[in-house]
Image 1 (spheres, one colour):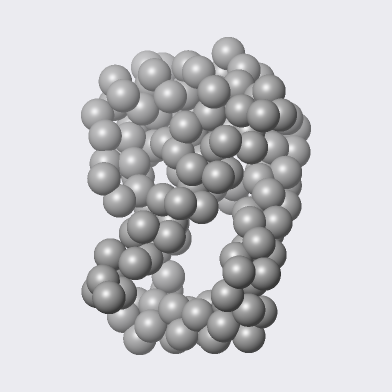
Image 2 (tube, helix red, strand yellow; image 1 turned 180 degrees about the horizontal axis):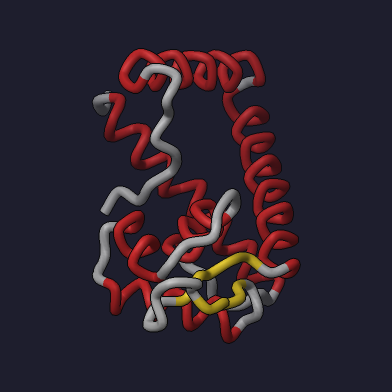
Length: 149
């Protein structure tokens, strides 16, 4: 049997592939995992492209490309930065917030399918155990979802 970190990575990849397959079936824009990390990052804040790049662990140019795509698709809005004329704040639009709700429901559906495959009690135990481990490592100050590339 594989070590736990490998199983977690493979499970995340399998569920992520199913998630993106369903997005394609529905006919949404070609959203990639990097877009999802930006949605989550912007959920509670507005941020500059530099902030987004730092969060994703990518260059400002790579973050700008992602923001440009989300802007073209209507998921984010750019606003002037009050003190830095070169910078812009990026925030989610109503479409972006609606997408986040949709994504949360889709992740919930996938979790339900996992429960059908391995049992609801097992899923609940996994969630409890992983939450306890994160609390052990980070305390109550959880770092939030960040990419693992």
